[in-house]
Image (tube, rainbow, N blue to C red; front, side):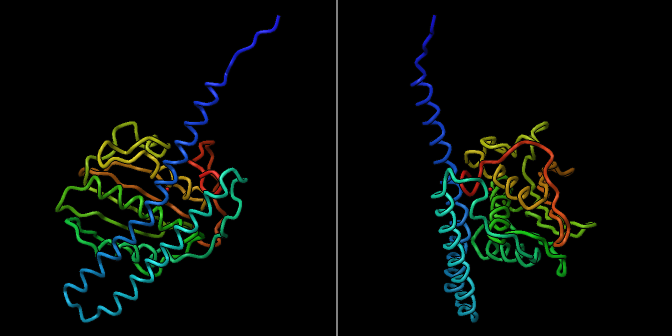
Length: 260
């Protein structure tokens, strides 16, 4: 006796869901470079309206930033064009990155835009370099800063800190919002789990952050602040330290080839 079961509809449903997930991923990845581009344009416009004496320098600096983000968009398009290729195919090599410079560069973009939220920076110079990809490191910072902006009440600051610990550099982004729901500190790094219902989104940003940080041999975690709000902490090994391989089997929405 042979039993046959028509699974055509089930396969079609799975295929539709898979393409839907990929479409959401593409939209999220494309949105990230658009944020610094928008901030750069706002900075240029504000400098022009204020008749800043250093407008020429501001224009050149932000034009360079916009061109860099356009290159990021091209890289994202190339990555998704390789959808289905082996994981890691075409990845750029890790390089020695100045954490202080990258963090300050991103904060300069946000400070140059119009908005009611202030940024408190505690990023000393002379921190050890880490092994990373600058574009992906900026992507993580954009995700964390945008997440903090969604949850920070007007008039309260977002704190950004960086410091050295034995063999590592730590970056923290803290907001004064409602914090992370109890028991959700780990789940928010899973794909399609949103940090909160505020601000929309499909729950990919923090999952992408985790994947990037883990690919750099680091860790990312979320904790609630004693006075209210949440702190997202990234820990990366300094340049020359052996990377730490994540012990869990959880994977992130894949990036190059299957792609925070």
